[in-house]
Every structure is written in structure tokens, then in C-alpha cells.
Length: 228
Image 1 (cartoon, rainbow, N blue to C red):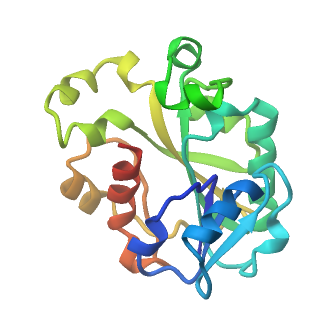
Image 2: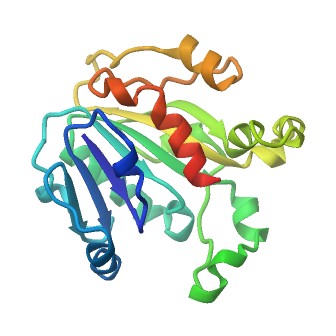
């Protein structure tokens, strides 16, 4: 089961297979546009709420292993907002894996993103890495951290060099796990296959969803592709 927070007009749910239910969550005005362009039913549902509201009542599968995707959202929020979203996730699911994109505070402060100038949105918040983010989120454990340039390196060789620079690794994708019962086992460990397929460096990177067999390998490629 998947929850895509701040989904916008993302169409990944139509390309992916293997999930039992996919929830696209965004503000009511965004979901209104999405409903006109991308009407959904059956295994794909719309949730018209703020990510900081308690949307847990909209999720039917409370005990199913959950994958939560949160891309390009945290930089526009405050730390309190981010903690509130994770509190809702923890309340809603006994087991959840979260893909969340974060940005280094120095990048937040100095980066000017032309794609958001028209909306007058501003980068507000960032953290320096997975350990710092984990410290803010009781019950969650950071199990992996990957920089955006790793995906770009597949298309442009210069990013293989840039990826070695700390400054270039400031925009990252975190993988965090939440277990209501800390003794619960991990879903599975496919580290070797992922490293071979995506030529990833040998770092702790657990991306494993036994409940989503068709998604095990596609989800990481699709996530990086969407961000590019």
C-alpha cells in the first residue's frame, strides 16, 4: 500500500504495479484539478487534505505494510510541520517505510529555484542528513541516504565526480522506517541486487518490500526519474 504525499499531478501510480492500494494526497485545490484531469477509482484513491492534517481516517488498510513517498515537500515547511506529518504516519501505520527528500540548510538558504518563482513559494527548512532527521522523529530509524546526483550520474558522467563532493550531496533522499513494535523484522534485504542494477555505492541502503514484489526494483528508478 502506497501513500504519495503532496502528489500534485504525479502519474507514477499508473506506471507502477504490485501495490494493493495507492493514495494520492494533496491540498483540496490541487486534488480538484487532478480529479478533472486524472479521475481515479478502485485501487487508486484521492485524499484532499493538507499533509499536516490527520488524514489517517482516509486510509482503509491500517495494518498493511506501507510505503510513504514525500518528494520536494519538506523544504517548504517548518520543522514542526514535518514532525506533524511523521506523527500522522506513525499513528496510521504499524509498519511504514518513508521515502522523503530533504535539503541541507545551507542549500535552503542560498539556492534560488526558478521553477517556483511564479508561485512565490520559498525554501524554508532543511537538515544536514539522515541522523539529524532521525533525531527529530521518535519511532523512526534512518536506514538509507542517497544523493540526487547518484541518479543523474547515469545520464551525465560529470555527476559521478560531483557526487564525491559534500556540497553536491546536500540534496538527498532519505529512507526511514517506522515500527510500532521495535522487535518487528525488516521486510527483506535486496542490497546486492539494487547495487548491481543501479550501480550504487556500497552504503547501507535498504529498499525492500516483500509486499510489493513487482515494485522492488522499479520504485527506486522511478523515484529518481521523477525527481530528474
